[in-house]
Amino acid sequence: MQLKAYKLPSAIKAKTGKQIKLLADDFRHPSLQCKKMRGREEIWEARVDLQYRITFEIIGDTIFLRTVGSHEDALKSP
Image 1: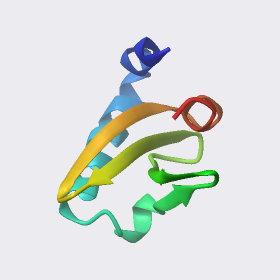
Image 2: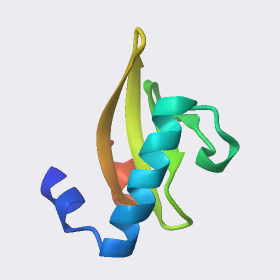
Image 3: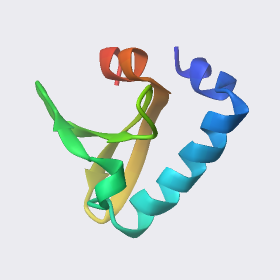
Image 4: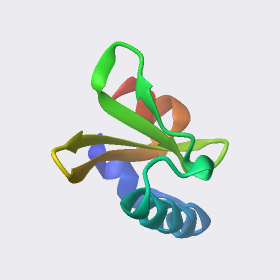
């Protein structure tokens, strides 16, 4: 299902790029609204917009992106 991330609408791709830059600079930036996923303590979620989310892991000082997709899809299969 990871291929769905490549089929994002253009506007969402642009927003995602902006949010990834914020994530790289400061994952606690308020517009990201980052939080640990319930039941998956090693995985975090961040907001792209009201409908889309990014899921990621922090290992050491590296952020590994996992999924970009709709809120439902990203959180169902992080």
